[in-house]
Amino acid sequence: MNYEYFIAKRIIGNKSYKSSVSAPIIKIGIAAIAISIVVMLIAIATGIGLEHKIRDKAVAFNGHITISNFDSNESEAAQVPVSKNQDFYPQFKSVEGVSPYPSSCK
Image (cartoon, rainbow, N blue to C red; front, top):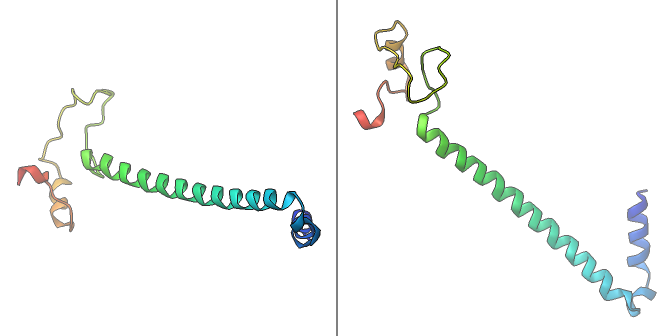
């Protein structure tokens, strides 16, 4: 048997504690632990939800797939655009849900 469970069962099951000074303290402790667990679950759930929303917003800026030149230039502003005259480019037209043009150019 679990040692902590055994001790808690002995304290709660004992009739003498209900009329003593420690009865409200034990009830307040149990309530505090229950409330803290609920608050932690809510905090974790909202944190995960916000993380997903932030990820969706970040993807909206650049999209899921970005094709760029392979060079050592790390600057976003000075990148040379990729030419549309490539062997792989027309293949994107056959994929459902993928547009070769940004939504603002249609």
